[in-house]
Image (cartoon, rainbow over all chains, first blue to last red; front, side, top):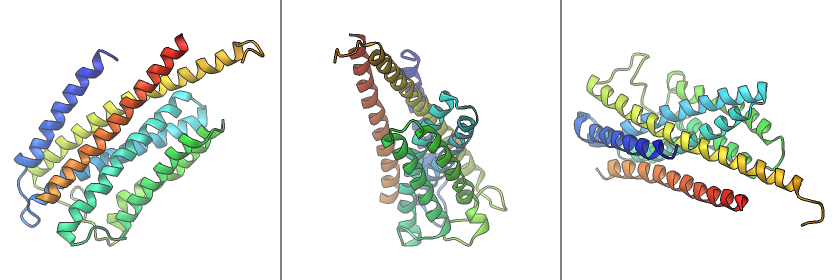
Amino acid sequence: MKRVFPILVVLVSAFLGYAAYQALVVAPTEQTMGNVQRIFYYHVSSAWTAFLLFTINFVASVIYLIRRNPAADAVALVSAEVGVVFCTVVLVTGPLWARPVWGIWWTWDVRLTSTLVLWLIYLSYLMLRRFSTSSQTPVLAAALAVFGALDVPLVYFSIWIFRTQHPQPVIGAGGSIDPRMMHVLLINWLAFLCLAALLCWARYHLERMRREIEETEALEALLEPRGSR
Amino acid sequence: MKFLYAAYISTWIIHLSYAGILLRRYVRLKNEAAELKK
């Protein structure tokens, strides 16, 4: 990892730089909103990446609940943490896009509210993992993750089901987007996926290190002669 | 344009802050592992 990781950091950084150039310079300017529409490339890419990470968290949590596999538990924790980071980007870039276009920073419509609830659910998941000392914490967290994942399809399909302030889907369900914009969006999503994979890999490595240290400490405490403390 | 720049800059502040948190955790765990080896 020590050798490969810095190379991957450079490669992903270069790809993200290229994606930002595509979004800010190459993509055509939208006629109604103007340049502020370019927030779309970061906002949507981050949202898709967060949804994917929360789906991975759901699958890993189900595997953990069935098999009690510690690696699945670690994957669930890592994907939730990185997913919250990307969901935070969605919640920050959304209002920055809404203010000049809608004239308001926030409205309590279904899409926006369900996204905020999704972020709060996974934040509570991370707080549970961080502060609970019970041996049952991974099981409780996995159960919470399964319920939390129910909000993901609600967020995604809310603009199909309900009348919302949020724009209608640009892909599928009759939505249309300029092919050049679509190309730039896919480049940015791929770049964010690479960033997410890199962050997950680094976080997974840290989680393994932490667990190894905890196991060694527990073993030392067991082997230590009584009364030596 | 200020909203566009604010969105892009805040995205990178969030990602770099998280990368900083991971780096700090790595340094702390590495020190803990070195302490255990002693």
